[in-house]
Length: 138
Image (cartoon, rainbow, N blue to C red):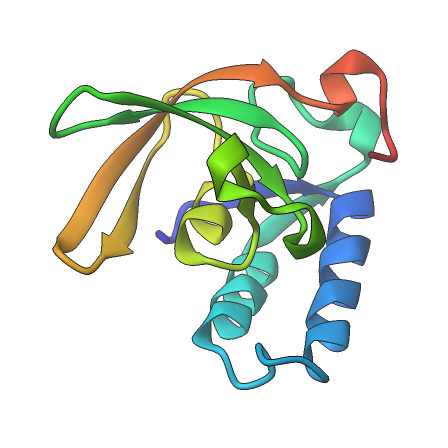
């Protein structure tokens, strides 16, 4: 995560804040994942769902990420924890990669900590963004 401002819809912000509150009664309650998500939300520029550019990764967006070291392309859908299924490319907002990609735009590069070090990923393309499709409450 960097210091670059990210853009989040007011609808996503509300649901993510509720997720943080609800997670206090789960195994995540003392997780650094929640702390990282809180920090990301604090630096976010909040916009109405109708005003979010179609180039921004929002919740339930499907994106192509390009590994800057290998040029490998990976496709993920950013979802809430209950909808996560890594085998289907559905990544939860809570682990580092989910939190890292939220709010970034096409062309932005972000880091993701992995056991072997850091990965540098670029948002290559947004395949689907709910807001761009007219779905402002997905």
